[in-house]
Amino acid sequence: MTEVLDIAKKDGRWTECPSCAEIVITKKLKENMWVCPHCEHHFRLNAKDRIEYICDKGTFLEIEEVLVNREDKGQALDEAIAGGEATILGQRCVLGVMDFSFKGGSMGVAVGQAVIGLMHHGKSRKLPLVIFCASGGVRVQEGIWGLLQMLRTAHTRALTRDVPMITVFTDPTTGGVSASFASLADILLAEPGARIGFAGPRVIEATMQCTLPPDFQDAGKLLTNGFIDMIVHRHRMRETIAFFLRWFSET
Ligand SMILES: [Zn+2]
Image (cartoon, helix red, strand yellow):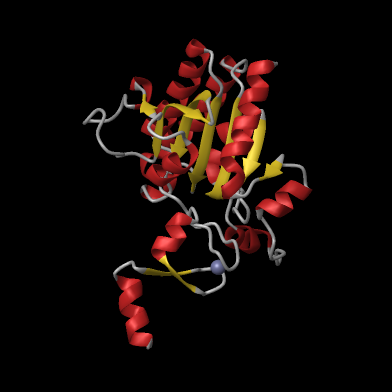
C-alpha cells in the first residue's frame, strides 16, 4: 500500500498535506482552492492559480508597466510577480500577484519596477490596487540593487498614497517585501497560518539567544498584536476584497 501511495504522490495524483499529513486527491484539492479539507491548511499558490481563483473569469489583462523588464513581452510568467488590471466580483482594480515558486518570490529590480508600475497605473487609471505578497525578501543575488527596491517601492507608495491599496500576506511574506510596500497598504489582510515577519525565527533565536514561542510570526499572532487587519479564508477572499473595493469606490 505504501508503494502505491508513493507512486500516486510522485506523479501528482495525490498530495500529502504538510500540516496534518493526510493524503488528499490532488484534483479534490484543486477544486477546494488548494485548502486541505481535513485541517484547512492553505497550500502555497502560484500566480496563475491565484489569478484564476481571485478574478472574474477572463478579466485579468497584463499591463505594459509590469512587463517592462521582460524579454518576451506578454509571454508566460518569468518573474516573481504578475500584474495587470482585473475585475473581482464586478469591481475593477489593479492586481499584482507574487509567486513564491519563482526564486522564492524574491524582490529584485524587475519585481520592484513591476510594483512601482502597478502603483503608477493605479494612480493614472484611478483604480485601487490589490497585491498578493509571497516572498522570502530581497533577491540577494542582486545585492544593493535588490535592497534599493525597498526604498523605491516605499517612495512610490508615498507619491501615490491617494491610490487605495490592499495587500494580502500569504505564506510566507518576509524580509524586504514585508518591510517595504507590503506593510504600507491601507488594508492589510492575511491568509490563515501565513508566516509574516522580517528575519526568520532561526536567525532571531541564534542572535538573541532565546527560544521563540511556536506561534511566532504566525498570521493569528500578528492579528492579535495589531499588525494586520483581518485574516481571510481563501474561500472568502474574493468576497472580502470585492467588499473593500466597493467601499473604496463609494467613499
Ligand atoms: Zn491538512
